[in-house]
Amino acid sequence: MKQPKKILVIGELNVDILLNGIDGFPQMGKEILADSMNVVLGSSSAIFAANAAALGASVSFCGKVGNDAYGELCVRTLKNMGVQTDWISISAEKNTGATLILNYDQDRANITYCGAMVDFTQTDIPWDHIADFDHVHLSNFFVQEGIRKDILEIFKKLKEYGITTSLDTQWDVLERWDFDYKSCLPYVDFFLPNESELLALTGFDSIEKAITEIQDFTNYLALKMGNEGSWGIYNKEILKTDAFSPETFVDAIGAGDSYNAGFVTHFLNTQNFKESLINGNLMGAVNTTATGGTQAFSSQKSLHQILNKLKTARKNEQYEID
Ligand SMILES: Nc1ncnc2c1ncn2[C@@H]1O[C@H](COP(=O)(O)OP(=O)(O)OP(=O)(O)O)[C@@H](O)[C@H]1O
Ligand SMILES: [Mg+2]
Image (cartoon, protein in one colour):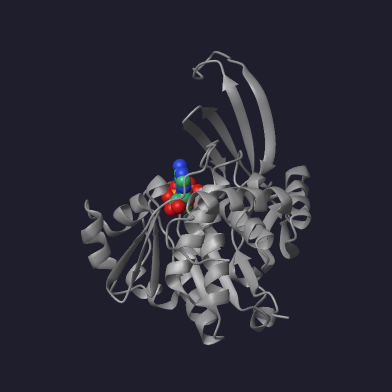
């Protein structure tokens, strides 16, 4: 039997505090009410880890939480979803990070406290065990102060161990886009931005110009285009793949991370770029059928039901995935 690929996720770990049914927008000196509140596992890296594990990969997480109930919730939820948590350390000084999400139908207003993830540095990475892994995924490094400055060194070192790598920068909340992509991307096997992130990073206002600029430095580039699917760029060729159309759309929170999980796990098993783009689209669409980033992946039974529905709807088209 084929062994599942071993993936290490290096990244941020925090909770999302979701407020729904909010009565207007908050104003200084006043108070408004929300109908419901949920505290769930948040963060791009954690959604990737949980969903890659649901898709059959062997996944370990390396990150930092505070010594508090939210930290326990993060670790417990990851464990319940089949992710190894041995490399998650606890900050002595800072609380677990949290994002307060005010949800207004199609739109959201977020406030993030980075917390313990700021104390996470490259010395927390299990370098002595790194050769045990096939692949390392890193996400959202703009909010990880302790990792950001060493990003080039980390990717260089990983390649010295012969490990494949993937990177999703996510949006830079400080909008400084301080990332030397020309030096770093040659060490990244799969670069996974969305359209607006690629434009902001390169400073171009057209996606074609941004691709022309970045493709000299990337290996495989999977560009996420929301409900228009994704574009694959390799060897200066652009491969456009369509999104799937779920019957029910709930929200797109985490769709990009589910896409990453679908793309990376499929590529590691098949080395087929086009199929991996399609599998990314499929998992992104699955993500949108339930609230938040991991809900649609939390039971194998319902995951397979959704997958079958989405694939059946596309049965007249040519696509080859498991
Ligand atoms: N409304 C949708 N319907 C169908 N598929 C979708 C939809 N939204 C997203 N997807 C799929 O999920 C993929 C990733 O979504 P998106 O482009 O929103 O990533 P992102 O902007 O990185 O998301 P995130 O906010 O999670 O980081 C898309 O490429 C697409 O295949
Ligand atoms: Mg994203």
